[in-house]
Image (spheres, one colour):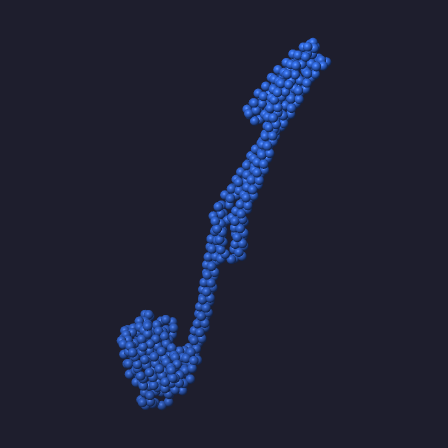
Length: 519
């Protein structure tokens, strides 16, 4: 139910009640006026009939007195009474005319009765006038007898009966009019009580409907809008029905849902933005840290290169000075000097090549000669070249891989040399298959490494605590080269502590490298 329909219904109902009340009031007024006039006319007619009866009997009494005692006033009193009687009849006829006009033709019988009374009265008056009191006594005696008969029979019986009948009728009509007026008053009271009951019921119904469909929904809507204004967009507004308020609540709930969605979207976007900014900040910080690290590595590299190159260059320079200065040397002395110079130059070239390979791997410009071969055979050949006390174990075959054969051999030799010089000599090599490729493990039986040493083991020119004592010829580029070779192939390298002591050097390689070879 719509509120507009409800308001229109209330207005129409109260309009109908008002119109009905006006109509009932008019009807009550007209009915009251009718019954009042009817009662007034009945009383008036009754009074006039009583006056007529009294005047008629007064007239007949005067006629009798005139016959017995003589006409002392020359019929003046009788004439006056006759005029009064005629006026009474005229007044009664006027009242009956008013009643006929008020109630209709049902009062016509009263005119007939009045006409009979009037005719009978005139007849009796004419007979009484025929008797003259100036006649002789014997005639007076006969007239008196006749007058007595008229008074006793005709007047007392006929005329009195007619007048009494009219009086009884008027009395009955007056009583009926009073009874109808009283009944009408009771009816009016009942109608008024019915109107009051109906008005109370309608008012209660209007109040109930107003509370149910207007007041209570408006209260719920006000509470919901207050919550929405406070930012509680998850507030549910459930107003049943199809009223305008219910539709407004539905619109507000949809709007709150949209606002909640937009707010959530903005919150998510803000979180994503904060996450992106944080990620970007972290990336920038990482880049800054990498830049700082690269700068520090660059400076350290220059220092290390300067330090590492100083010794072979000094050797080359010293041998050259020895060969060039002083007396002429024998061919063997020159050959020995050239040999030492060559060894120093070879060491320097190897150092430069290793540094160049590591640098190119870090910049993504590494050069690899890719080919397919059996990794198992490569490990066997390398172990034969090294000629070391090494145990080789594998549980997989074949082990085809697409990689740079030379670089993998170089990395494996570096690990074997570390195991030989830093791990006690004896080593064990194992080849296993992984979900993406292969894993090469070199295990030594040495004292192992501390956590700090493992953390810095793949840094350039880093040498462990036992390396400087066991192997003084090392450059500290073995493990960095191994890591660079593994990364160049899309793999990785790491160091772990072996169970029971020693170190595990692990290289993991994909079966098919994702890098393109650069010749």
